[in-house]
Image 1: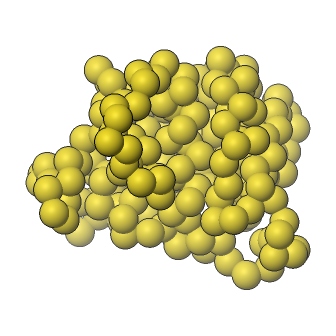
Image 2: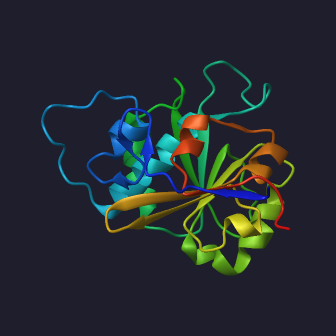
Length: 196
């Protein structure tokens, strides 16, 4: 089967599949759920939070990180309002114990990073940008429509304070990335191979 579409709306012991703004950290994050309701987040805060959390559920092949304490490089291709929020949250968070460094790239620079977020300004060039990392173990993420159809790995969308995921496992596997089943279980759809 080329793809799997998620129809169940629960996971495990009553966890809700669709992520709300107030429940986002509890679902993918490791922080304990507080008794006090968290403050409402802005759309940019929600998106930055999810982008950084996604990386925590991916395993890169050995040799990608030179040292055990090498930072995770988060690349942002193009202009986006998320840049400022990513820098703020990147200083506060870790990806599996590693520091996060945020860098911005503009066409036609090759993105030297571990996670690459492709902004909406790069829609006309998305196929070419993906070609620049096609032989590298780079997790590619975007909000662009049809991103996974172009060979991108993770597309997430914020709709009415809910985050939805679409994952292209064929692209992730080709890049030798291992995606946690926990992330796959919250995806609206998972593409396992080429469309037939």
